[in-house]
Structure formats: structure tokens, C-alpha cells
Length: 348
Image (cartoon, rainbow, N blue to C red; front, side, top):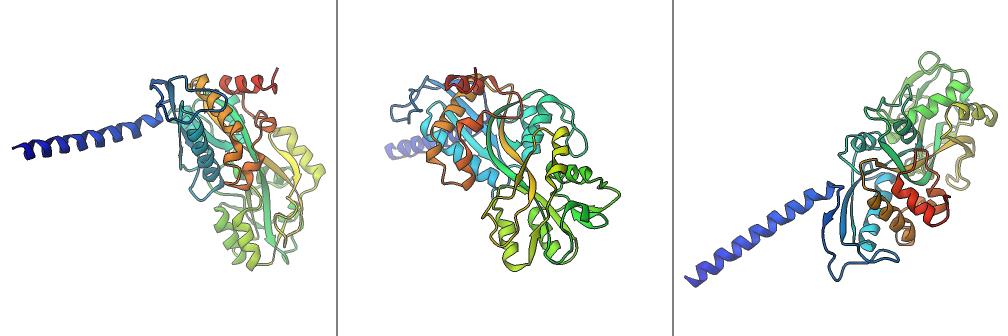
């Protein structure tokens, strides 16, 4: 009899553990604070002890093989280790546009995206490939993270030396369902090329675009990524490729309409076998919803920046995540982020 009672109690205890585990997993998407006293062995956040308030945040990234996910996961893991008041889950998504839509519908608290999408989702407006967001104004900037550069690639013997030479060609303007084609279209427009009439536009992922270029299906392919982009590095090892140049004076005209772009050159040494050219760069940024508590955002920014050394080796782009540039977001700053930047003297 005693053995039966003991066995029954054991089963009930295991069932309780399973249900508790399920409940804990679901609560990670809740942004509101919960009464949760920190355990005695919880790691402490930089220069502070636990306040006893717990915030559970979900951070949208992109596919698990991309830079968004690698950087977002590394940051989240570090913040979880050093701050007892935050639990941050890096979630794989379809990328920056979906992340913003999830933030605006309050299904997500944080998300990585490009500066252009962050700008339009905060201030409203936008056209063409910029989605007409359902709830503009509900997105706020948290941190500028790292730069990504525009890459227009063609075969070395194609005769295409600048964007003006793309007229009449079949050109991949970027991945579908993303804001990336907006940069290539902006440059083409500055050259007086209508992307719907003067070229044959197609839309492929980075890898597929490079494959179709090598196969002769298209004449050039465009993408935006942190350099060096592994896909281009691999493609250049087996194909005779080159980067397409853009005149810096023409790029100046692009900036008049799109202030979130910056004129740059492709990174020296990023692609040893390829030429360096003028292009545009844009920054990847971390955004939050206006519904996310100020204290939660403050704690995230503080711990992510003050513990950068713990995830700096996760990806070369993490070297760029420093307070002096993190504050330079394209969207209006979230009050929680602004509090930290004021605290360290970067805002008045």
C-alpha cells in the first residue's frame, strides 16, 4: 500500500513539473512585470542588484542562419546571464518587416530591422516596397547595431561597370517581401532608370540571386548585408565576379529623399578577389513597441551595452555595438532607452 501511495505521489509531482514548465514557456512573451523574487544565485546586472520585478521579452530576428539571428541570440543570452530582472528570448522570424508588424500588434516586444523600415514604421508614410504599416507610430528605437552595405554583383566580363549600364538588363533587385529592393530602386531612380520599364526586375534571395547570375539567367543581382557576406564570399571563390560601382555625386541625390542611407565604399579586405566600389549602407537597428515598459527597455539597453565584451565574438558585426553609435537610431527613441543614454551623457 505504501509503495502505491509513493508511486502516485511521484506521478503527481512529475505532472506538476510538466505543467509548470509549459506555463513558464508561454509567459516569456509577456512584457508586463510580474512579482518574481530573484533567487539567491541569480546573476546580477551591471552595477545593480535585482529589483524583484521580472520582465519577459521576445526579440524577433530572422532565419537561424542569418546575422540577425546570430547577433540577437548572442545579445539575449548575455542579457539573461547578467540581468536577473530580464528574460529575453530570441525568436526566429521572416525578418525585419514581420518583426515590426509583430511589435505593432503587441505580439512581440523587441525586433531587429533595417533603419528604413524603422523610420517609416515610427513616423508613418513610405511608398513602393515599404509596407503601409497598420499602426505607425507605435514603434520606437532602442539601439543602432551594425551597418549593412548594398552589393550589386555582376560577372566580371559582363560589360556592366556602373548602375547606368543596367538599363535593358535582367536584374535581381533583392529578396522578395523585404525592404532591401528599395535601396537598389532608389539608386536606379537616381540614374534615371525606371525599374519597371527600363530593366526586367526579378526578386530572389541572396543565394538564389548569385546562383542565377552564375548560370546566366540574370545579368546582375543586388542584396544588402553586413560585409563580408558569406554567400558572396563562396560565390566569388568559384565564379569571376565583380561589384557594380555607383557615382558618389549621384548617390548624394538619393540621400535627399532617404536620410537613413549613408554613402560608403565596400569594406576594404572584405572580398579580396573583388573590386571596391561606391555604394550605400544602412544600419540594422533594434526596435521596441510603445507598449513595452520603460524599465524593461532601460534594463535591456544598459546590460546589452555594458556586457558587450561577453558576446563581441559571436559575429564580427558585434564589434560595432557601442554606446556612441547605439544612440543614433532612425526612429524616435523609446523613453527607456533614452533614460540610459542620458544617464551616460550621450543625450542632454
